[in-house]
Length: 372
Image (tube, rainbow, N blue to C red; front, side, top):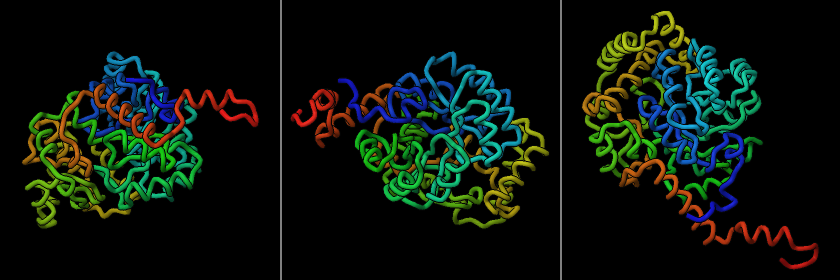
């Protein structure tokens, strides 16, 4: 592959210390040390998911990732986790500089993280949220449009990105609907400094997701996802499956009973105390204005994702997915995927006549009043 077009070296390349303006997302049960390292070694920013790990497991996972790559990577954490300070200390301990969040922590926490020398990158789904966290001092934002998988907003990426890039003076990373070089160039045209992808990295040969589950994604179309709040009270996009349809169409009592069972199972698996779980529930209740029934339902997410993403039981678990799954038909390695995206972005930029490195040098060398 020829040298990347100069337009592909953006602010996030310098901010994160990566080669290309591409990031993964911190997908619970999916963004393991192996996938994170493979993404980092490909020149993109890998993000290790820690929201479903205990503190000790997070420590081990970060250590394992540093064994597999010498490149920069980040760790995704929950902004409302009661042990967030301890988790942040692990990043400092291991020399990890990027802390990402699916939901932004509060202003006090952001200041504390910044004082620790961490680069704070929350995900947002609305312009007002971007403006709020920018005022709180974050370093960049991931603006995820409604096409994205998992917890998502309602504004399409093509509308959200220009809104956010026009509202804040920070690097903005576009997410929701991206899988190739054309999308990367489109994001740059909207003013973004790069793209973040979840479903596309989930569907790679480096992903730990069972092959049968990957096959389920690959056979879907762009209309085979649905956004629902029945799983945990917050809208999230998942693949349509018999189980998803059953949950959406089923009664609230049955969902509540299932959720209580999942809460008990998650408590046993994670080793978390009920005191910490209740504290997290209170934080979620306040931040999302949820009822107690919805808070209990929130236990659905980690356990139902684990059932599918780890155990391969699509009959028992949900499949978080962006609409982009409908245009993905292969399972490349992370290295091949990133190479492909950059090569395609180069081709698109050349076709559009964007000044390349040679032409840029000629322009800079030209004297005033002299044609380059």
